[in-house]
Figure (cartoon, rainbow, N blue to C red):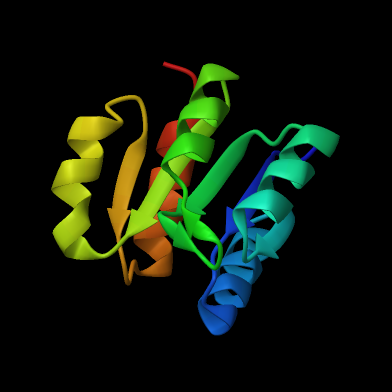
Length: 118
């Protein structure tokens, strides 16, 4: 069974590009979700193995959602502007942080590292 990745990204083209990248790599993909409430509802319906989470969606910042997911043992990759990456890494040491734009090969490498048990 394929690992499930939920994509939460409010930029339409970026969101679909991310979903396509993951599907082509063999993952089951949920999304893209443009809002926190939509992403949260999807996670409640079926817990994903990993969430790629833009730090700002159409209805606000996703910090509470990121923390809730990590508390529920869902792996999180925070996707943000480069200037936010250092602060995010400090705030969420349990998450992986990737700066936008992230080349597909680097993105898939990060996903593989996060999903591979230590």
